[in-house]
Length: 340
Image 1 (tube, rainbow, N blue to C red):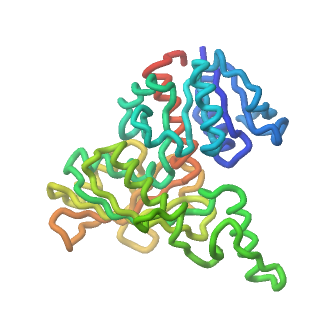
Image 2 (cartoon, rainbow, N blue to C red):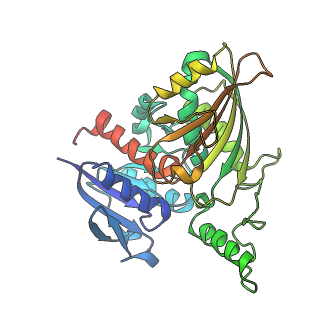
Image 3 (cartoon, rainbow, N blue to C red):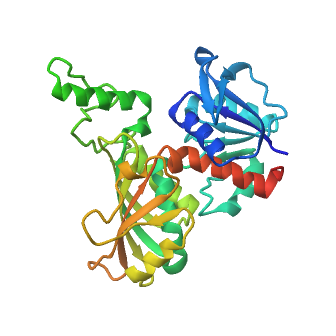
């Protein structure tokens, strides 16, 4: 016996990826419904070897459905997630709307699986921000061993994190560089993204942080340990898919780089590729379509007593969004619903 599953926002990048991963991982599904806005009703999406037509989110009845994976913005989530939850359907939400609600668990299954039992507070589970998700997978096993005091992270985030329009903008601006007369002005981003980097993701806050940087701080504290100090600089780069992060970690106790490497090798969701030679590391183009979070460039930081540097790469549409949501669904099935 399987689950009755709804995918909300099935026509977007993350929604389509959720359907791909549900099929790839053979998630036990008895019935599936794919929903979108009224304007996209009837759009066909793939699910394994099947083609499904999207229904209208506005008129859908969530009664009798086990779980709904939401891949829509905060405005739509604010309207429809409480409706689904009230109907008894557990919502797994990819937007930022519920991440900082103390009554809603923010889950990365490799890090804080036990927190999922808090789902019953509102019948809603939050999926973290893409840049946070891959980082905490790397931080948690190291924190368990040597207690993290402080994290300094710089991100190199792909345009797919901004949606289809951003992917098209990068592609068209890139073509325009080589074809005179086809130059494309910036519209998704405040500056040109092709052959450029932009140290600005999400809106600016009063203290000078961007919202993306604030999210990494708040979410890391909620998922792992509120005592960890985090400072982030988040940068958009001209890469289509795959986020990268340079992470500096300061521990309470000394941790040798060799031990850190072995801990990460044995940790769930991580693949270590760390050879001190040309090409002995992973780049974002190599992680596309993969489930793992890749760790490379593990080395001691000689400027502090208990420091480690590492390089972290992951497919942001997968571990940063769709894969983590499906892993939450799997965890929910194992721990709570127990149908599959």
